[in-house]
Amino acid sequence: MAIIALKAWYIKQYEPIKETIAKPYNLRLSRNSLLKSGLRVDFLDDRSDIEGSEWFGRYLEGETVEFYIEGSGNYLIANIDLISQEIYFTKKESLSGLDPIIYFSPQYEYSAAADISHSTLQKTVTELSERSRIPLSLETAPRQDSPLRLSDSQLKRIRKSLLFIADTTPTASVATEKTDKLLLNSNVCVEIGYALQSKDSGQILLLSMERSELTGELPFEVANYKRLSYKNASQLEQTLPQLVESLLQKFKLFV
Image 1 (cartoon, rainbow, N blue to C red):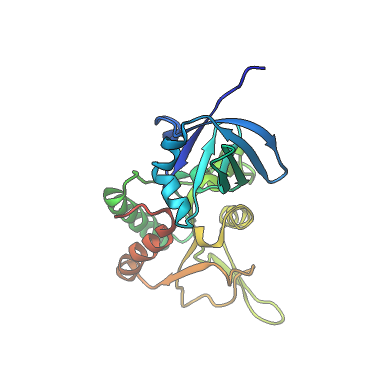
Image 2 (cartoon, one colour):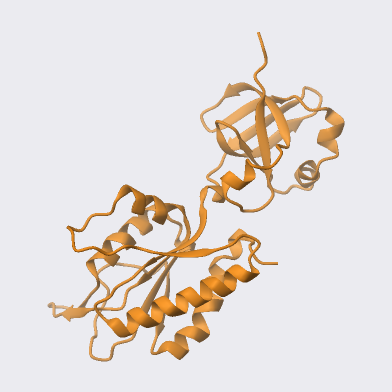
């Protein structure tokens, strides 16, 4: 029976998967068995090549070592047996499946906040991209007059973005028995709902310009997510860049 060699790429730090597989692979593997949450393989490379590799050195030091295996996805090394030439991998949800974009959900009802948030965010992303080892871009959610519905493309862009940022500046408020409720742009609410479902809390940032004429609470709970309130453009320009950069630290984009 012929051995079908699988290519595997060592994931040292975040980069889009399409860029990873464009590089030379680091391992040749032959799959023994596919487990429910893992993979058992034989490595086909020389043992001396394995022992001299950067990733094996990190493994011996107890660090987490990640690989992308063609046709299977991203895995972490659980154990290596150099004698029998076997490696045990465990399945991992990887950051490498994300695209280097910041996805912005805008509101346009309150134009003062709309202008400030978009221009400041665009400037922030541009400046951070100049320092990043991978170019970053800002993508703004489209707004149409058609019935409110997120397309498959929009859902994918939210899910695959590095960060999701929404303008939650209230557009109005309504009185209730207990406390006033702030009303947000309906598109923003729908996009936030999907982001809360599909992204980690550290990948979501909610911006809000303070409006003294409107008081109340948000219509949903966001206590575990980053929120940034600001009074004017100057204040947002001082705080937003540092906050966005801190949220991107997990991707190790900046030297």
